[in-house]
Length: 424
Image (cartoon, rainbow, N blue to C red):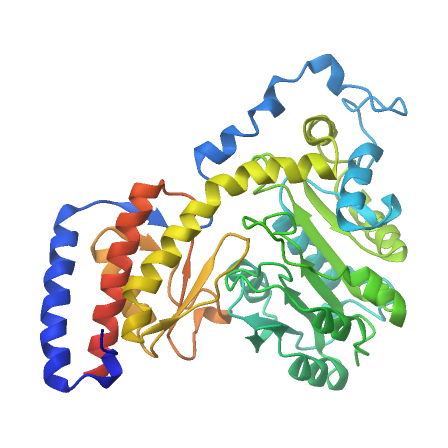
């Protein structure tokens, strides 16, 4: 099969006519499908129905005698903090249990830093002029939306096979005191699926910020989301930070949003002991505590780190065939034609498809016209502006396999049309 770039103009003209005919046939079928977000489907959610079937009287008293129906335990119940301390390789004193959304915890941390400042910081961010965040790209659109909401200037940092370009990050962080934060999804990154190398994690830990209130927002959302036999290794950033005395620099987040119920799970904030005490003082004005009944029922359902891993193996059995379906279509339809590239992940929820320049918007548009909704082109970049207009986030989790196969057939046809149009 000939690469599109190597075809003559006449060959591309004939190819386009054939591909457009296929597109019109698929469009006429009118099969609506929404792949715009990485949501678990109902079969995955069914795996956690045991959360709802527990004996209510067993969800009242913690092992130390706390009645979870009442006020108190702002940082969370001990058994739940211990479960996530074990998962993250930390201690209870490093853990704050939030509500059901780690995104809310991240949002609140930014707002508090803006209005109230951070541990050992000189004054609130909002009193220091233009605030800047570093944003590895392609990245998570909701991270960028938080910055945009509060007028925080965002700076693109290219992703490499080992994680963000650490030379660029070091240059910005260590030379500009207005750089206050960096967004990171260190394992099975959203959307590339890349896991940061040990050298990258150590480079983060070794940073010497120009600002006394710089924070690494370490969104470890996919820490247990492997769907292959061998999980990616991610160095514990707090272990790395101990070597440099930089533990105060990190806020780590995770949740059970794609482990149990997305709308009724648990969110976790992990930080140094000093950060935790400082944040709890701020949080005590906002709330007297989060849903401790939900915390306790998650502990009784998941039981241990081994229990979480066993639960996620059942999730993996459902997700892996979907990723195999997507990769299979891309390898058959895109690779031989030389019009797209991607990293094949071992876990996570997304695949980042990189097509030819100036094709992403057109591909998404063609899919939408044929009733397939994708994440908007440009979403994995700050301000929704993809400089190359070539990156599309593919989210395989929600459709069933037959629907996903139909969607990928259409996606590949649309990508081929967009590539041929761009080549002329």
